Length: 101
Picture 1 (cartoon, rainbow, N blue to C red):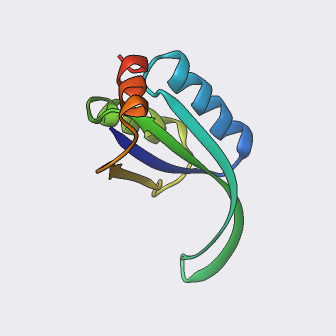
Picture 2: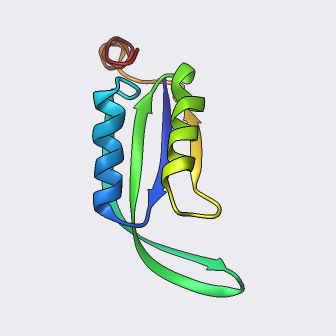
């Protein structure tokens, strides 16, 4: 199992992506959380409202999800971070595997 962190400019975009990924069985679950992001872009400090998506899926789905998000997001440099899960509840890991095709 892996978790992909992806930032979206608008909550409705993150939710649309979440529904698409679950409907297409590319992800077992996607948590969408509004956040404040502070960063420097083009030599200017930015303090922006964004939505962070926590995409729970399998390693085999990463490249497909990465490609889909890159095509969909309007960001020049999208945040796509893949985290390997080193430990989790066995029944949850099994559920994720069963949900993702």
